[in-house]
Length: 95
Length: 258
Image (cartoon, rainbow over all chains, first blue to last red; front, side):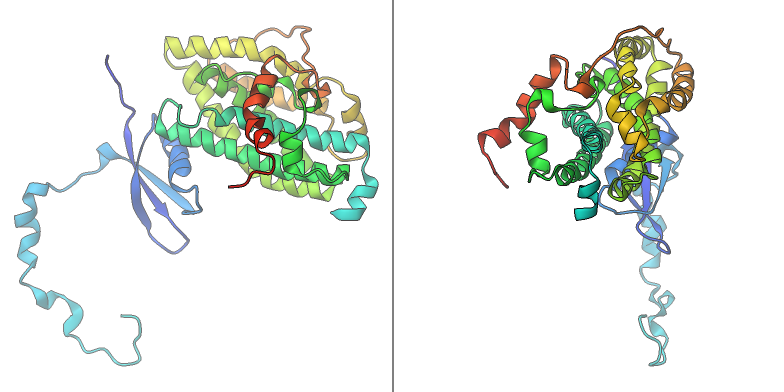
């Protein structure tokens, strides 16, 4: 039997004002309204969120996992790009 | 609420609150039957969430009804230890789910009604009831939106979903007569400012429901003289079976906790 799946949506939830939306999973839904509603039902049942973004999974452009060597490995030996070489004044907390 | 509310309590006031509580309880119980059975996981959770909203409303309302009654009955005693003829919800609430289309249409017809009801009850002269209404109104907004969207998806969907949605509407529509039927309890409650006579809501309800049904390309059945009498405790053959399932555990193991 043919099985037509509903489109997949990636769901991002902002847990409280001032924080970023974080990816928390995905849902199947026929349209945008439904995606928001079911995301609300699946991911914010325990007061996890104050805002939801839903993005069609097919609209996300992802890097190729096989391209990791050329994309990410070259950063490995450039430790001088990390800010750890700067001396912070004592008054600066939480860095 | 305590003493002041109790001294003002009339039989109509109690019955009005009890009816709201029973409607939430029985509709919630029906929705909970979907748990683990819905067409897709997302809707399974949505239905279970809505069921929990209704059971939560029922808890508040039945607890309060117990207080108004003043005979020491708590929410559990009212929910689980009454007999069929003592429930006061409209018959529509207890009708079987049958299929997803029936569940959706029933949820939408009731959800649209609840939205109006809670909006009005926010201004109740009964402060406890007004507080319950304020909380329930938020839930009702979501229920009306979610079920309304589904009515359109099913009605204006495939041939099969349209056929099922229309069949559900044809069966359920006559039971909406009861929602707005004249009722002495309502008249007394309305006169006391407790809440609207349900018949007052008919016009607004149709104005909310009909455009959605039209968008869903569904044909609204003509009104008939059919009346159901759940509000008077005269229920369909379905309630007994529902209660047998719902009451089985508390009756078999009185006072059980877990």
